[in-house]
Image (cartoon, rainbow, N blue to C red; front, side, top):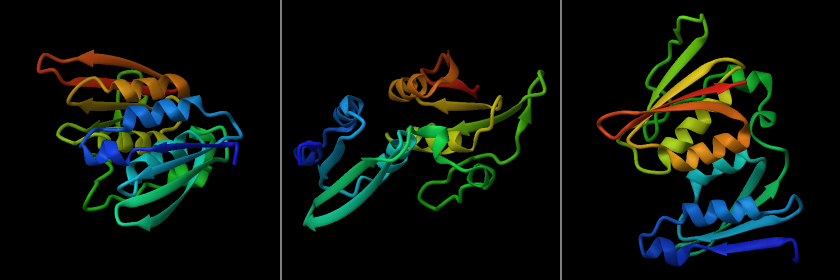
Length: 184
């Protein structure tokens, strides 16, 4: 089909290269009616949340040993338009593999705004971004989410700009970064 954009990252994965930047660059170049087809050696589960936030649904097919084909199709404008009020109010379940939050109770700051904290330190990419995107799905207007990462999350900041999320970054002496996110 002429409206299909195909990207094969199997060699990158076999050579232990992170294909995330290549994938995101391809996604950013997609036109509204184009379907993104990704060939990979693994089921690209961490990518599903990121693509959902961009308004894509996915279908994965295993066609051979270490060969998955994932088809991403545009369904909406993305991010906050994807989630119903009921979904936003429900907490996402934590799993043993990937706890969503290390806190449950909101904190009140001096302006009486609700604030949440998410510690992403020690996690391997793309887990910090995936956890943050999942938590942002639940964030209500004018609530603040502070994340603490091992370093400045450059790819996440690019996503935030595109999604209209206001943020500030605090670079800490140990090289880590705290990013304060607010849904306007």
